[in-house]
Length: 142
Image 1 (spheres, rainbow, N blue to C red):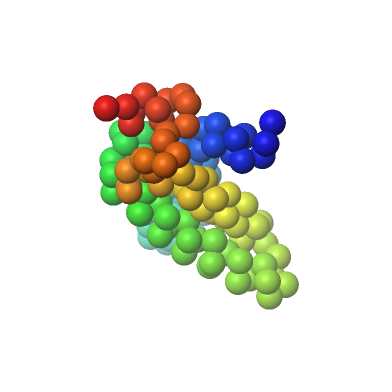
Image 2 (cartoon, rainbow, N blue to C red; image 1 turned 45 degrees about the vertical axis):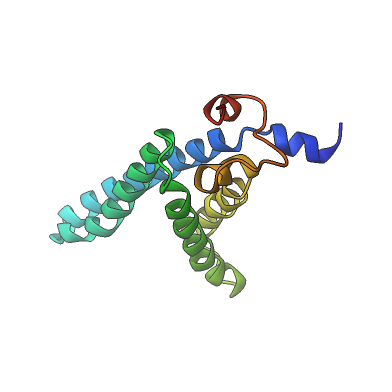
């Protein structure tokens, strides 16, 4: 079996949703940690940024599952910015769990978003290739 046909059969749309759920869960846990730490230190406001990030990724993940057309560019921009922001410290030798984790989620998310079936959410299916078999083919059927 050729690698190209394996890539075409890969259910990238499903894995975008799974990575979105993982990212939302991790950011929710970070929000809880920041809220607890902030409450103990008397600065509960420190939970606002991770809370906003968790809300944003949760909203985008739900929109992706509902097949919203705008969710592809939104995820692409968010994942691209996240990959660049987290790759900077890693390239500079400042290894941290947050930077490594962010890059490990955002870089594969970008690869999955540029899978032909994921791109078809925004641009429509490629008429030369058509949708891959599976859930995507059912959604793009006439």
